[in-house]
Image (cartoon, rainbow, N blue to C red; front, side):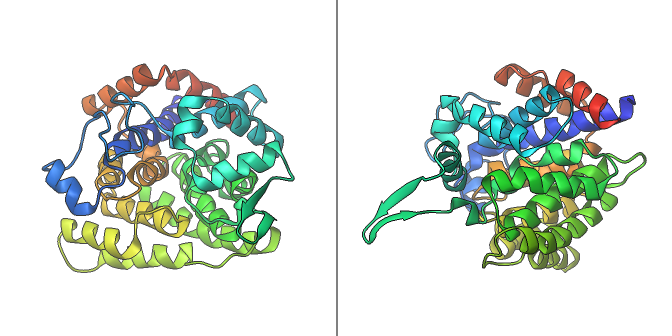
Length: 345
């Protein structure tokens, strides 16, 4: 186990958590409302206000995005580094029994999936009678927000990351689009953990992961209608490489690619923000915090994608990471070390 791998894994966990906690304050606000409320953009932890789902959180506390990542990571450690459906189901059910996270933050897809895990015959009443609802067919962004452990446990092994991402994803989001977005994120994490990797390497792997995940997802899972994660990633790339200032490109990503609940918005948005900040992982995550709409999830995904390149020695980053650990009673340093120990095998 190398210190470099441990530090990179800590960067993935820490930057994902920073994005989630900071983005919980701007969630539900528009691109312009954020700039009106926080001149210059939000760049520190604040207590969420009345417009946020996280109202009641203290500054630096995470929501469902990183709390699920954290519990899945812990479960993998407890299972000796293995990622199986049973390990993931156990972690998700454990998460559902923690009211401060589940009661306040569980998204519609995850909530429905958990109900189905607890009762496979789960049904809902509609005006037309009682029907069984397969929530797993909803292509929402919860598939990618918690997926970084698949990349962490497969450093420099994109195919392994894709395999494990599909295992994790299908527990709550069992469809081709969700799998595509989850695999994009996990592949970026895996490639970023390679010795000597660049952010360009990680983002190239993200595109490959999205394509590979879509192909496999159509074969092994539900093939659902919706915008392609891959095509939206290409669109984000076109915007980044096109004309205009950075602020103008951020606005176009927000308005054209989108930053909402759908996986085909959140993952391409995160990918585009990373492309805009190829030399600054923390800034990519902060731009996600300020992009508008589902900012905590987009920032968590962005943070996971680029976290391997975070500068842990930077005073500002170190301060944010310390605040995350204290606010949530997390020991991410220890968790990263344990994950690295299994991943290096």
